[in-house]
Length: 397
Image 1 (cartoon, rainbow, N blue to C red):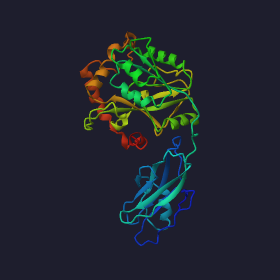
Image 2 (cartoon, helix red, strand yellow; image 1 turned 120 degrees about the vertical axis):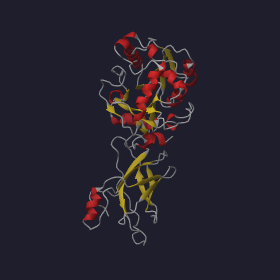
Image 3 (cartoon, rainbow, N blue to C red; image 1 turned 90 degrees about the vertical axis):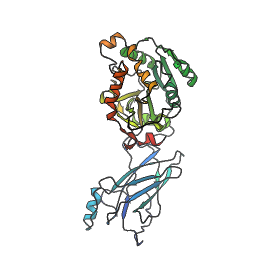
Image 4 (cartoon, rainbow, N blue to C red; image 1 turned 45 degrees about the vertical axis):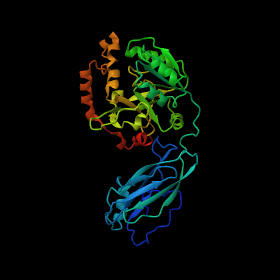
């Protein structure tokens, strides 16, 4: 049965098994629908509906060779289905629809077979195979584009090994600006990113305005896409290739990437942080950054034309969808002594001008103030894995 508005897949639907005596539930799969701006060669969105006249809970499983199965159930209202069966005298729950993102293998094949089964716990349908055409919204391979990552650092030997191992594979080039470090930070940069440039900062104080001016001067030396991140900020994408292809296809020259603040809630009881493991494999509690500080901008202009703090730009820009790229910021995690020390070292380096303008006010000065700041924020945390548009960040690790 195909109620008004539902689209059949572009393939022959397997023969119905309605004659089977134990099968009493109904189901249908709509055509794969492209998510607005977030349909990539790595996933396809499937929608449909299913219900049991006896009111039993139904589940489905989507399988693709070489990929983990996706289990789904009904969570979406489908009033078109309700109306269709109402006319036939059959009551259907309003929440009879399902929606799931099915990961596709990176094997280059343009046609991928997705197998679906449905069950009510007693009877399970035979696998129903649908041939899905891999989305061609993005060119593959993506057009060549040089990418440069720019970052200041100051006594970051605790976080730099993880930050560099994460970002070096994502960017063609990096320019790392040493703001007078007295630890092994500069040596770590040269060891883990020997093909990147390490240079000394022109201003050793932390002056928010001068730092941004220095960064934009560095950007003007570079061509291609440019991105500026702090050492606590980790860009996460499905892959470098799909991310670059998306930047090209969407048609803008500047994009805001959403920032997620990672925090250690007391009830999480995380194990001790391991600088040798991916960040998303170790931490998954946090919240969205506030609107004022919600983004970092990647662009291919001469410079970023940032407002102070680099969380906004005067360039025409668009927001990159969270389903394709996000920044995980180590905001209040790992909540241990090395991390607290690195946060407390910042405020003493603020310039007098920044103090007078109240720039850098978020950097507290004492251990007690830092602990109070932590306690006032941990109530904002949630398990980010449960957010549908973020699950990919943590489940792909």
